[in-house]
Image (cartoon, rainbow, N blue to C red; front, side, top):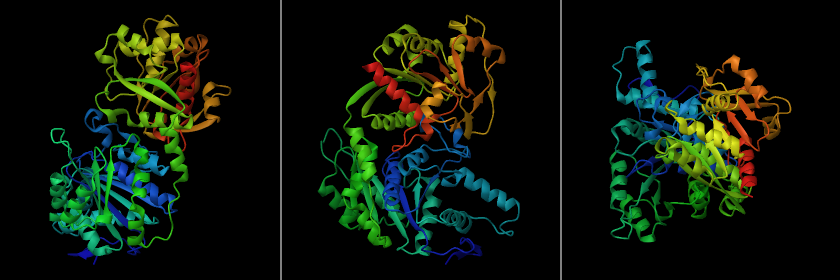
Length: 519
């Protein structure tokens, strides 16, 4: 049954069973780790030779996730097509070693905008548009349309079970289970077991109530993944198994790990893939050998470097998630551990920050949400330039480099502020200057990287900047300093294209330079 009150949620030519759906919900707390778990499951399926389509629904009424404040929600992740999304999309890309598009993400705002536009254009034939069947029907239709051509579709439901803003999405999933059949849809709940320090033992009551809330909404979890600070005990697994009527072999634990990339290996070791394999009649087995090699290198480094990340979002660990992950990728590739520290330059005076930098092997200046930059950033750039410390400036960091260089090297006390060119964000091509340092790092003359915005450079400055040693190695998109071990600034975001098994060349070159500085 796909038609309710005349609304058909089945796309033309759709065949149930062609794609298996795995629904990932969360309970007890937000930020429980659904994104990492969804990506880990995708990694297992991909390594078994299956085509996976990851998808996330966010209950926010925002239409453009680019407007979300990173101080509250972490970084905004930019896809190749320019879509600005929740940072979980970055996790999907890294674990699945792929590039996604706007089709992999949906907010409530986007959904309702589509429905209201369709209604205004007569798309519902004068019917009174309701949550059932129209909103839930559009959700089911969208999932079926986007799953076409894939073996498995992972659907992460943002937020927590019981949130008003995702209740109609949960209802749509309940209907999907009935219509597709239980052999084609698998529901996972990621719950959390608390461990109060005053008791020094794990307590499952909150997890039980969270799962009960999901069951009240008509969804019974087929698999439960228990997040916890420490490895979950067998007795806790048994309690949750009994309470939720979920077989004990379908209850898995995933405690806090030193490295999130261990997650798919932990799940595989507990027999997770075997349970799903039986449910969906999958014949192949995952080959995680390359992933295991990456994890081993990450956890067993031969060297260590210290990197300062100077910005404003330092009180939110997710504010620079992609930069931190890119450092981990490059570190594993070079058998080293990157010990990073987030420094808020707005809370320190210039001299204190410069003195602190002496204990680091390199500096990264990230782009930030606000346009507030004080003298602290400029002095850090100057210190890195003069001391020979490896430096990597991202996005607006390019403009700060130009301003610092123009004032302190070229002697231009009045530098015209750069203006923003509002281009469409996303992947753009840059041609690198022949013989430049950037070209040697990329080992290519043409690169494709992702932008959020681009800035103009005052044409009157260029000649003076170049004559004093600043090199425009990719037009205004990437600049470098001659006679320096590693001093590069980009208008694009190289961290967004870094993958565990394929580190971004700039980050790879940066950590190598930091290692040289350490030695």
